Image (tube, rainbow, N blue to C red; front, side):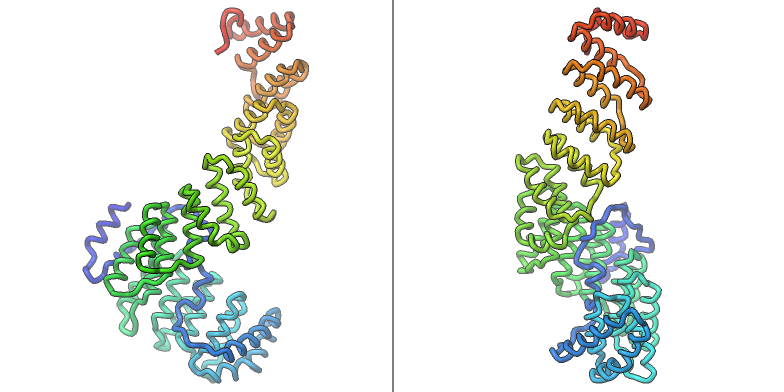
Length: 489
């Protein structure tokens, strides 16, 4: 696949370094909530030209916002508030800055913002025409609510009014990007490059870098960055953050380090998004030292709002071999709320505690799994649990676990029952050992040569001669040979 993309790059005209892709296929990968700084929330206000807003303007917009939020349950009340107080407010600022500021303050209520936008669109016949910044805000909100049809409608409406600016193009490209329409985003970029009234900005290229990064098309992402340099556009922090997000998504750790060095050389100061991306990258790559250094810089923010990153750090410690990994994992687990339970993390901790022979902690994690009806289907995890109970001589805990696993639909294996038999035999609990044979039959596990060898060794150890002879006879009958002649392997 990569060779095909490179061949496209070689055919590109010198002044257009970004290749044209008629069909961009999304790469299959798992994304985490923190992919990069260009998420849907950050689209609001990103594409419009910024006007210096006075404290008075922000104060008035804040008062109107509060009234609208208080009336949001009743669409009629929202319209009345806008007619009584909004219209005069918007007329005072004919450049559209009042409406843009109001939409900015309604970013936490996207549905309400769209109601306000629809009202504003209906007023344009008898009021001040909408500006490109207002349309850009509206397109961004439509993208945020996953209403792509409305976003396209707003863009078309603005174009029909001869309001085609980089802001409206960028807003629609951002809406496409955040909703997974990479091909449409690419097509819109080509349209912008051919437009006579406007041209791509650094924000445009930042969006394109983010699109390619999300698809793990690293060659195209880097080609986009070279185009920025070729056009003498100044990369900003968002540019570097989006590049970093692409490298982290593609697990290209050397490129991550190179980019961080480039930022330092260019005196680009990282922000919170940069540190969060670095933290995720170091966690995935297992670079614990740098992970911990980065975590110290953003600990308060991560502990409060970035639960997925805490889970990524826990996974990093689970894969490591440091001596105090369990203590560090326990400290991080305390930061995860109960409603953030993840079955895969629960099973990972069961396996970890089993490897370390921490029986109490393993049992607690197993209990948590049963409470959440998590079903373990991996034979490797089951054998880790069995081995821990065996090494710790906890046969009663094992017996209880087996019963719950049978009821809970966990992956059962013959080793569960053989381990119980060996442990019962070691404590001379021969009747309970024999009862395990019935449990095996109930779970559709037939007796094997190993089963008979366990019985033979148990009866021989405790001088049960009559039963020893019985087992010898059964072994010969089933073709397993005479245990007196064959040593166990």
